[in-house]
Length: 434
Image (tube, rainbow, N blue to C red; front, side, top):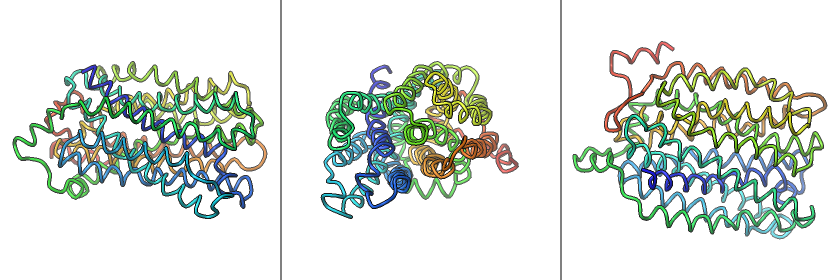
């Protein structure tokens, strides 16, 4: 299990490194390099718009790779998605700017960001199912938390490289060529990930489905025909997690450096310290999920984010590193209280024959609802002087919607990996009533 968990963890860490390094670059330099004819604010909004394209592509990637995972196995998904995201990231680092090739530069940037999102959309489902379908039922939450720890490590790698370059290069050097280095580094990380993943075996659950000839012919059609309500509820529940994470890690970076006058190095250090705490706490919270259930932790995390929305914005507005770190840490602990158990919760909610498609689609659709537009909306809401309370109200509103969705979902602990986890017919009216 440790070898399997490390393989799933390494892939998510690498792919989320690729995804996050773009978000950091969008907040810092991509606007003036690829959208120079816009005003500074409009250029940032345009860079965040290309950032949002990756989120829009993620559900499409989950549908594409989910079909592969439910038809051909989880293992091919792990390799193909890693290659797609890694190559797209390296190519972003090689792109000429607007000053060199004109309008083709932002168009190519959008295309590569789309491919990044497409690959990441398939990655999560394959990595999580690799862990959950091998894990013993009573420790499924713990082992499934390994790929859930990957995003924190990927974020720390991406921002650590950016922080090092920001501290050692002049501003002119960083804007000229320094920002490209983190994108080039993705090539090395992808090679390491492929070495780990090519030796993995197929999961027991999928081997059993294949032996019994029970694999779904068209899993996407089956998911939206038989489980559409479950997809919408799970995606709606996850949206608050994406919103608070990208407010903390992407919008706050831009707001702190451009609106509050905090140095780029200080903001990166504050955000990285907070994400490190989140990463350490992920397996600990997952063990609580194995003991007390998935749904209670999702509810607790959602309520925590809702109550912390206004204090988070107030602490950020001070510009004081210690206070900002405190605000970020509490927000991300609320986030991880939900997301630490999702690696087990989402696969348990879907039956094995459509599990890769269903869980991946819901996870990435939640990213569109909560993460794609959040930096753009928050940037608009924070225009002008004074504390941007509109951003806090926006986060609290999303949390209210997510809370209602989680209330409508069933508990799944402890469900065996080979059994469907959706409620039986007599229990079906509960989500409808909610």
